[in-house]
Image (tube, rainbow, N blue to C red; front, side, top):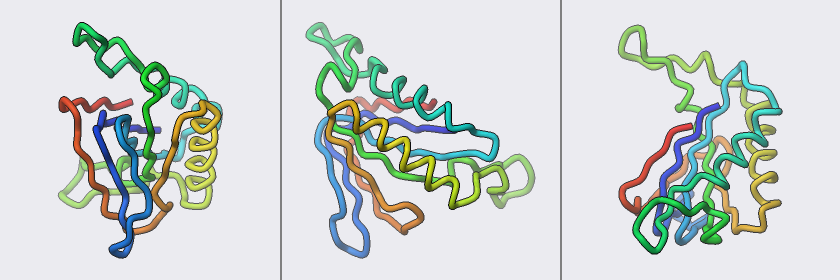
Length: 143
């Protein structure tokens, strides 16, 4: 499982020139699932994301989490995070979990995040999306 977490002041997903979802201060999370990933990893990664201290406190230190600031979350599925570029110049996606199972993992991950009470928005699984963001910092963390 791979997550790219970007601290944002705002982010959005547009599909076919129509705004699908948007958030304000919080995190844009690009979410990829690999063949060997198991469901028990979902809760671990969700809790890690919610409690990761990447937001500044009053002294300007990264001491606050999404839960602390009541941040918003935009989760976008992205199988290309599972790319293997070791051989040649064309990425291989053989390590990505097959789409049906990956979609189930994505939806379960989002549901776990929603139990936090925070505003959680999504993209559309397997859709061609335009993702816009203003990365605050910039801060980008890879799990």
